[in-house]
Image 1: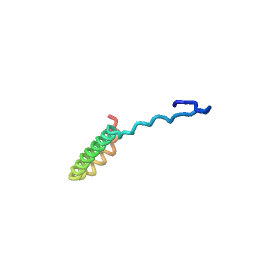
Image 2: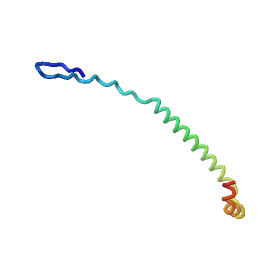
Image 3: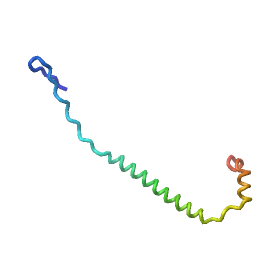
Image 4: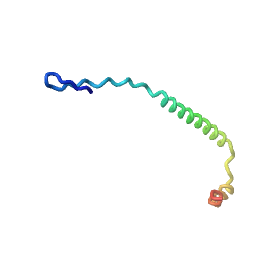
Length: 76
């Protein structure tokens, strides 16, 4: 700010105007790309759920085997 003296009093000039704010187009494009990736992933997951829904239920013996050996299967 510039200060000038006028009749014994200090007069300050107003600050320069701020430049206009421009929209953050790069940020919007990046967010749009993230949304598109998520929508594509949702589509893949929906297709996978449909395909899994068509399989026959697992037999009781297989379920029991997996439950008994879950620790071995995960940590080997």
